[in-house]
Image (tube, rainbow, N blue to C red):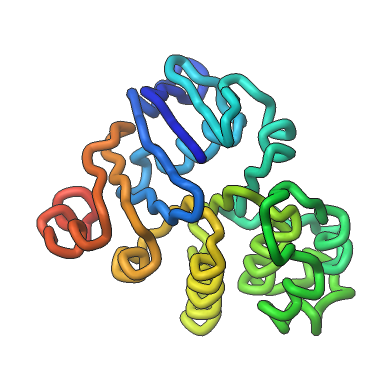
Length: 234
């Protein structure tokens, strides 16, 4: 579904990624791992068209999306849950989930709508008429995930979806991601909780100083704890 080939990108004159390649098949969950500052968010922003490529190419769902604008990539079926949530402070929960509703994955059998999101996150139903800036951090994270889901994406990207959350809310997010995996949702996820990602993801890509230094399955990562201390600081 997604093919990233020899991608180099960065911010202005500062190059961050150096020849990163990875693939994600339909229905697969892939985790991007690495210490802070290794290029994980930069990779996500590059895939989503928010940063220009220096070299390399991006293909998604049979299209060469290299150089495409973010809105065009989104309409093709890529949805992002960004770092920091970025909920609109002047929109209610209901307005968020209504304004972004779309059908960008024609092959889906059971589509996402506001009612299905409320079923996954009952707290959002209770807060349906509250503005984005009236929500707790955990509620904003639930809303950011729900906002992405109602677009019915082919690929869901989550950048640090459990960062800064209370343990109980974090567990709710992990439960949500496990449900999405079981439903066949294709996911690219960044997070620091390696033990949880091993249970969730099919494969993992480790970034070190903007390079993909290791790729492998959850079984392989679980078996080689030296990788954890070498690249992840665990």
